[in-house]
Image 1 (cartoon, helix red, strand yellow):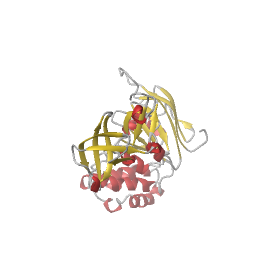
Image 2 (tube, rainbow, N blue to C red; image 1 turned 30 degrees about the vertical axis):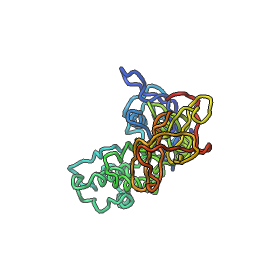
Image 3 (cartoon, rainbow, N blue to C red; image 1 turned 135 degrees about the horizontal axis):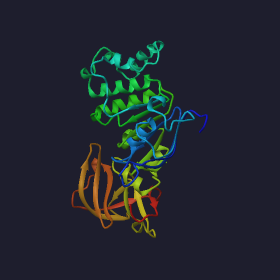
Image 4 (cartoon, rainbow, N blue to C red; image 1 turned 90 degrees about the horizontal axis):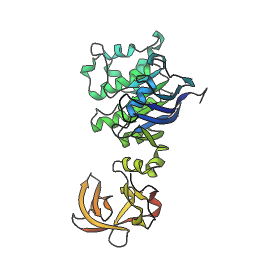
Length: 328
């Protein structure tokens, strides 16, 4: 992408000494200016290592990293213009919020941006406070404001919502989306939570064991994951995976989301006994033990079957994904 604005990562490998496998293995992606890429995966997937490689905090073993068409491989972090926000806020406790923010300003004529950015992130009322006087969510918003004010070419967010309570997660997540109004460069947002990833992303990457399992439009990746491993991970409840023979296929795996299955009295393809009922409020997740393993079905609370009852499960052919592999 020479000459283009954005982040371009090609064939990136990070291999730590004495490690049996690379932390990042042949990873490639492109984030144009004005787009937000969410990278979602389980703990140990290599997500944070990937961000650290982009901003120059870890040495890469092989590959190319270009920011705005310029290779940054071998360059120190301060020469990359990549701002990174960590799960911990890393603010100077002996300085006020305003002083923390001024530390990253490149010139005096940018002081007016402090007010603008802090209002966008709803921390403008706390400029004269010290970090220890703020809540965890407020400190994290200040960290994001500081990163934006540093005039980066790319903004890297490493699980910034991890330390927050559920209600604060949603609020800060919404404000990350609003950051786009003040920052026009590429954003890479790393998380292990699929809801956070989907809410923030223009594009989505699923990363497992250092490799990209799937990437592209977030809804497509959610609805029809490219691999069985991505299907088994992504979602508040991941896809059900059963042998293809359950649906009359010749081998492979069949996958379907809990919300795409229906509990029926007659017909259906799968049958089994209700083992567990998991209530989440408006919805209920019913765990059914079938001859092909446990299958989870989402249903309305009014339609909750009794534990121990026999039930049948129907899935429309259009809602099935097929994977040629016989196992994960």
